[in-house]
Amino acid sequence: MDIIYFGLISASVLLLSSVGFALIVQVEGFLNIAHGQMLLMGGYTGLWLTNIGVPLAPAAVLAAVITGLLGMAMYGLLFRPIKAKGALVMLFTSVGAAYVINGVIGAIAGARMQGYDLPPVRAMLLFGEPFMTRYELAIVIVALLSALGLHLFMSGTRSGKSIRAVADNEALARARGIDPRSTSYLVWFVASALGGLAGVFLGVMGSLTLAMGWQQIILILATTVLGGLGSLYGVMLASFVLAFGIEFGLLAVQPAYRSALAFSIIIIVLLIRPQGLQSLWVRAARTH
Image (cartoon, rainbow, N blue to C red):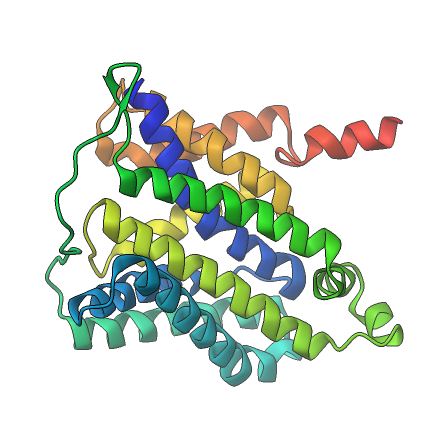
């Protein structure tokens, strides 16, 4: 049962961090390596807020909003001016931005490992057996609600439909009266805010280190490739497949091989489904 609990928690954090990354891939058409540092930014911002007395729940929300605003600023200052130069230039710019953000946070917060000062809690009981702590249960609930909210936003709101239109064909979207610039700003805010919230959850579950952003971007890339580049629903499914696959794999190998496990799962799945997990419903839709 521990595998199920840990798998759910890991999948929840991976979902929050990966759907934002996939959203930027879908709309902007490049791999934003700096997205891993949004998790770092969110985690350390939440830590600072709790250290000055803000309760955890509002601190998590504020950290997500602040990280979302940072993402918007980063897009406006760095990526929008070079968008016409192509995906490769934007990719390398994101790598440089990641190093800058990591260095600034390191200069302010220091290199030592830090953690949230939370009161100890016991695991709740389910059928007489230890279940999750209330923090862990909150992480799972918030992640699932965020996924549902993102689905409803993308499919049922004017802004969400604008994002989908820009992702499909920016020129056509502009011809229909949609402003791609404001749409991109919204995408960067949502993606970065979700990443910041995932960073807070990582801090609540364990500790914060400057390497966290680099470690997480590997798993985020793995999840995005596994789900299918640019497929939000594929990434949501891949978060659970990858998280549970890693947890089961850790029964046989050491935790140090977590990244190797992740990419082993990707290789196996892509050998069967070269288009990623999104091919499960894309192919089914084409056959009907």
